[in-house]
Image (tube, rainbow, N blue to C red; front, side, top):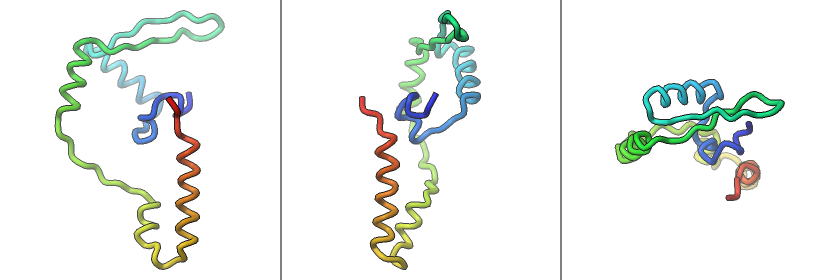
Amino acid sequence: MSRNSLSPVGFFWSASHQQIYRELAKLEDQGLIGSESILQARRPDKRLYSVTDLGEQHLKEWIAQSCEPTPIKDDLLVKIFAGRIVSNQTILAELAHHQKAHQKKIVYV
């Protein structure tokens, strides 16, 4: 599964498949999600997950809680901050590179 096929969340929160399935198991144990097994021909069975009423309530409460900002470690921000020591063309080329990279990731809904 590619990052783009998951959801736009993948652009700012990454996790391995192992982490995701481990968390899904925990959420299901807590009754926050449910799952059903979907039989597939010539492929392993698939699990379809859905949020329970309890899970939706828990999610609403979590969203309403304040959270602390996390530090951002981004090479591009450092380059822009220190960019005065290189030509404008150098910084503009780096910005154009990042713009193209992000445009490739855009998922149109």
